[in-house]
Image (tube, rainbow, N blue to C red; front, side, top):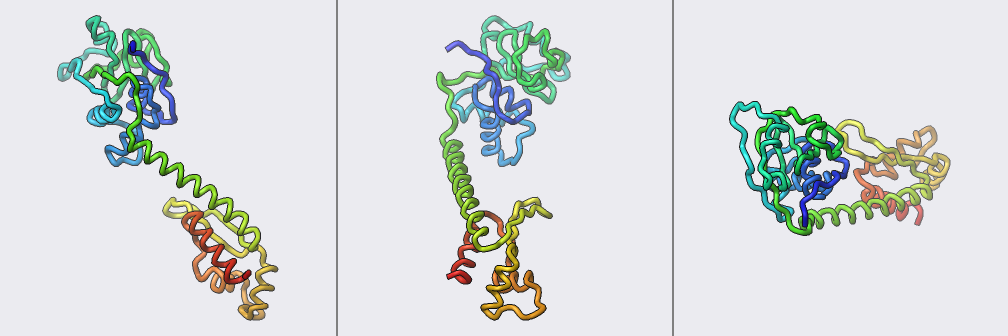
Length: 253
């Protein structure tokens, strides 16, 4: 199959994933996911050469050094591209310019600074960036994501579907039980859910009938102690569902 530069796609906006997406056809987000799995980093806002090698390796491809710039050299990307042989011009190439990656094939370059558009080097913003080094990339006829990444994605999808189902159940059950749900992301940044007394008339009557509230006592305090068991913060929908189902068994059976 004749080599070609792909239109980068995905939400990641940084240069390494953009260049590798253009070279492989894999989304920028999947490129970043491979890097995260390999490096343990949470966010991919920049890449190292060894991470680019790992991405290509995970895609069953290979990278070979095409040329190495002279230390302290002043060769621009445009000058380096002009000096390639015909064989090199036909190769899919990842180029490291100063603190930046671009994808090159023929006279065209794909760069994150031009929104991933394929442009002739003569009109590319990166044409005067200093060339550092380049690697030609060889890929299988069909580029596929690593099985481990696909399995992890499947697991995340299952968890997301389960959370969606739990959320629907929590919303419905909380309405039946007269309990309010409030989102709380104060402090650590973790999303939590606070369950509190929503229907005070309902709970005042129920707690009064059970002899759990005295005249003048705060319904919120009694609800917190007698119904919530002193714990109103839930860390996910599954925990909230467990709490509501327990309340349903204990107070509505």
